[in-house]
Image (cartoon, rainbow, N blue to C red):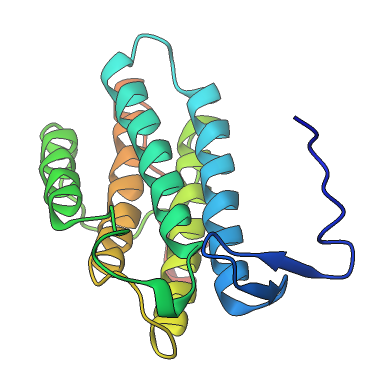
Length: 187
């Protein structure tokens, strides 16, 4: 199969239901952000220690789910209906259960933390912030176009999940979290 089609050479792309849109259309831009997020999860996976088999499996499942979400977005607003929707409330519930499980041995959060501490934790924070950007873009898109109503809660919980994972990865190596210090208290 040839990778190039030349169909997009003039800035247009075709959605899964055949509708042609400009490549900078908000729907196309939104699923592009989801693709970017998925790529950064791939970088995170490359940094996670091989011994963390459960976490690696969870991350791979998230990549699969985000690909499904992008697939939903690749259908026009007019084609959006339950028959094509894959993101569901059970995905969000699973994320909540995993957040609780990964949080079990984490220190109580009393301060804001900075996105650092180790390369893998910092990458988890990059993914968290990209998830928030996708969530904002999805919210904007949902104001003018039809979307699966399960997407926004899933994305909201997903960013919480990556915040928790960043903390979990630091705890696994007994690396202290870098706390934010108020300006008046910085020396």
